[in-house]
Amino acid sequence: MFPIEKVEQMREIVGPRHFSAQMMLEFVAPEKARLDPGALHFYDAEFEARSAKIGDNQITGVVLYWDPSTGRSKRDGSACVLLFRDDKTRRVFIHDVLYLTAPDEEQFPLSHQCTTLLDFMMARDMRRITIETNGIGGGLPEIMRDCASRHGVNICVQRVSNNRAKSDRILDAIEPLLSTGRLYAHTRVQKTPLISEMLGWSPIAYSGHDDGLDAVAGAIAQPPIPVRPLGSAIKTFSANTNFKI
Image (cartoon, rainbow, N blue to C red; front, side, top):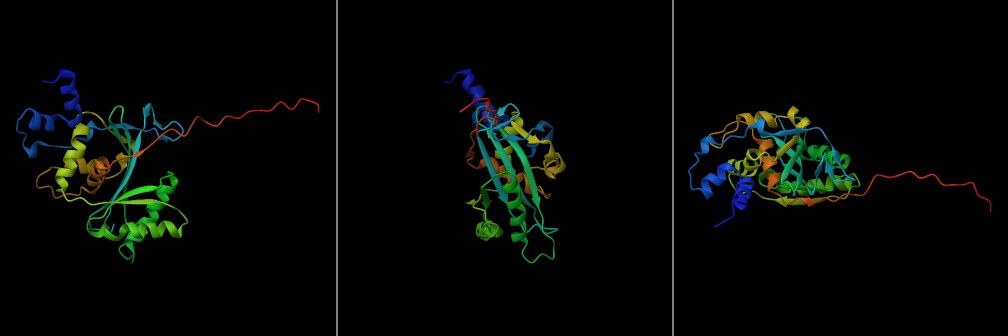
């Protein structure tokens, strides 16, 4: 019913596990699903705003996504992900993963994190952030806007609420990209807990930390902000002043 090239394109988009289970009706046991960090493609290029490129990849969209927590020790982690997309190749680039913390004695841990994150946004000329507002994040957009106002910065804060099981969100968002070789990560991500989270993660009976993975999954699921080249590099011209009036 469908041309072979369309079938292969569908397999590449949804990933082999989903394709086998849904299109071929071949049961895949959930416990067999894994997130292999060895399938990540690492890069060290930075995003070039003038050309809207990361290396040779033409970037078409960007998402900044925050899955918040108090950031205190022995609590769920607070993670924020900066993610770029290349729609032509359907590649996704995990550019930064911030694990935000606050001292246990900090009276306003969320405000403390907002200040840290606002500095991160300004350093990368970001003006829009999506915040997961389940639980503790319910009042966070207002705190973030207040923090930005006190620093004289205008930002856009978008709310999002997730009701699906965390394991399903992580598996459905990350696994298809990883298994088809379309998930990239900056080399600095290797210095974060994200890699160890991937190594130990399982969709069933997982008791370890997966806060970074959940933030990555949330970022992948969000509609990106369109990105366009700002223009060519600034050129210097010398005027000819050898003339008489």
